[in-house]
Length: 371
Ligand code: CO8
Image (tube, rainbow, N blue to C red):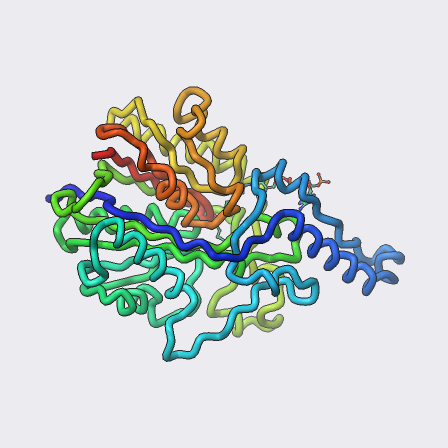
């Protein structure tokens, strides 16, 4: 058995930013347009008007101030309301691969490695841009990595589930060096025309290098243990799938072909589930002094609750870093952005926990110790 360690991490952040005010201005223009087009039906009581969104609500309910996206022109155009991304030819890398390679290159540089040193690529994300060939295999090719590659999807928990899979393989010796990469184009499957959720997501890619601690070339975090759990729930759902064409009632225009959630229920059900999961994991390892929590980034109040429960007190500034004010919810990448940006200052011997949670429901935790 070998001791797995995280020896590098990297973040690709798209250049384009949408502030809450920009988002709300475009949403309200869309609402006004739809309401004007349906003025008669609304006046007759046959249709409810589309209500306006507000920046104040968004910040208060979620803590989000802005989000990075691959394309803001389409998202903010009231006649489009989704990103406009060039269709890639079959002979060029896909959009997810491009983002992933950027994040992987940063993570590999931090680990002092080349792509050819890697013998496992896991592309772990909420959505894949095509059914096959696996996005991970294209990333493997672009990196010049050897071994094998595969895609996995556990929604927002994809990164921690991927790290568990990679760490277990490194531990057993079946692979030597792995990279887990999370390219999340959340803007592609968010319903920007629904004010209940239009503010939630952003785009990003993160990557984590996992190898034997004895192979590490610089600083690293030992992966002490990992723990994953799932419990079926319909409260976060997207029905877009390969069987859509077989349904008699149309193809892509239904609301359930995009992200849907009952946010209130998710909040109430997931907070206790995640807190108990993390506490059980720490208790099983006999750890009572975890110094840093890198949590999934969906909602600031949610993280405040979880942090308080797990630490047994209100976490001090920096103990539970949030990045969602700048990035919004980036699905599986959120906890890894927090880890990548806020882990350098941990002292040797100190413990931290990465934890992601979301649709499924799913929750994954990774206990690390700074070497
Ligand atoms: N502007 C103004 N008012 C609004 C808006 C808005 N934009 N949106 C809603 N309101 C109104 C509502 O209509 C409601 O009005 P009323 O009281 O009259 O009915 C009122 O504000 C309150 O609405 P909510 O109850 O919905 O508000 P909440 O306080 O619950 O906040 C949140 C909503 C922010 C969504 C919150 O519930 C939350 O964050 N919940 C947790 C969500 C979560 O953690 N989800 C998991 C992450 S998703 C995941 O796992 C990944 C899935 C795959 C990725 C998909 C990528 C696209």
